[in-house]
Length: 129
Image 1 (spheres, rainbow, N blue to C red):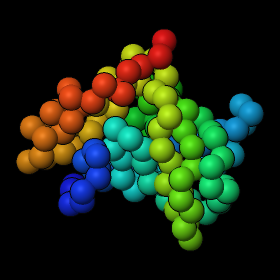
Image 2: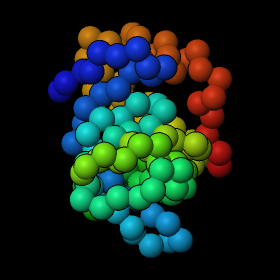
Image 3: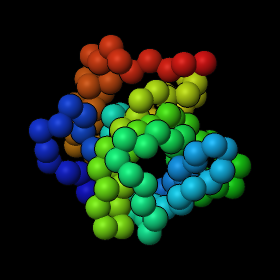
Image 4: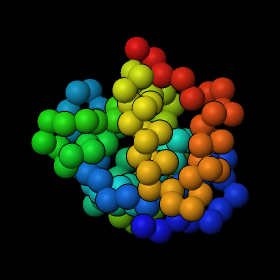
């Protein structure tokens, strides 16, 4: 587990999870998570999308075997060679919010208290059912 030190709004944690980006119901891009926060993620992938492209994000917590999945509306905010940065614009459902909270908290190590405080103090972390 690697914790990145930064001055961002939310702590980012490194986790290896399979991610899918969809547009129009079709899987457009598949890749591996580089890091994730309550605000978004960095995805390692071969494909690319233009900045400001809206997408649906699916983080498969069990490798895509039909188990828990974090679902969110997202927006491409940065493209780099073999990487896309996605900002979450809306988490879909209370389960996605809880799964994301648990994922970041579990992988935050010694920063767990800070991560918990970030989650509790941020008004914008509301799920849509």
